[in-house]
Image 1 (tube, rainbow, N blue to C red):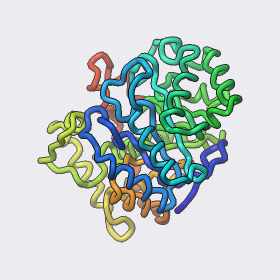
Image 2: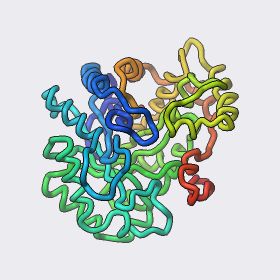
Image 3: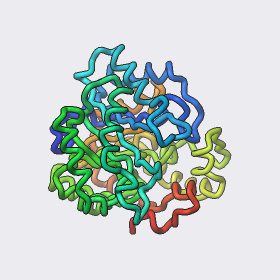
Image 4: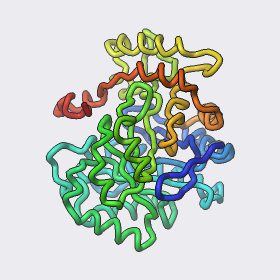
Length: 349
């Protein structure tokens, strides 16, 4: 297993981590997972050398209530795993605090007082610690963000106090979809150690400004959605049908007609260097030294095996990386979830 440093946290994280949105409960728009299999997948992940597990307060919840009642399904299953494995010191846990208004992405012009009001951050930290059954989080991330939040000071004071109490070691941002620079002013405060962002073969925008900034300022980068919700797995066909609401929308028949020619073009690059598209998707991201870890969503043992096999693969050749630049495809297929969002307002130009 290859390990990389998570920016200025100094933590050594597995190059391939584990995303847990679909791990337990009833993830929004997805079919309910087999939690026994999810638990086996967690054990297998650590057995193979994986040590970075990314979760969130809302993962596995159906209704995303505004109060703190109810189970935090992903966090609780991870907590069960930690107790069974008895290896808390070997596993790095990262979670996320949702905005109090439960809006994804963070809306433009909405003040931080409506998203992360005074006192709310610590309540959510305490709630996650209880669900995980641990005393300290290695990394807590804000689940949404707008760079304008940097103008306010309450959140800065609160996270500093929480850290001093020993509840959280390091803080990060999970930034809005397809907005890789909507965080740079905040990073300049020095209070934030990591950024989690969408990064994949189709969405290459982070390479322009965020990756150079992170390299210069020692910011840990966590790459999410590495296979574009399954678009970069090599499994899509013109007849693909999904049982879950989320992918049925994301891969509508109209969008499949957009995806398939692009996938076919990428498959022309497969051969001796890379065997399949799923492998190519992860190795593209890991070719960038600025990336600390990539977190494909995983809930089955067979996918843990396949994902972690990539961690020790050699870097892609310069020739192949140059070819992959030609396959950038910037668009936002998430905004359709909320008709109030303007598509062009939530896609960084």
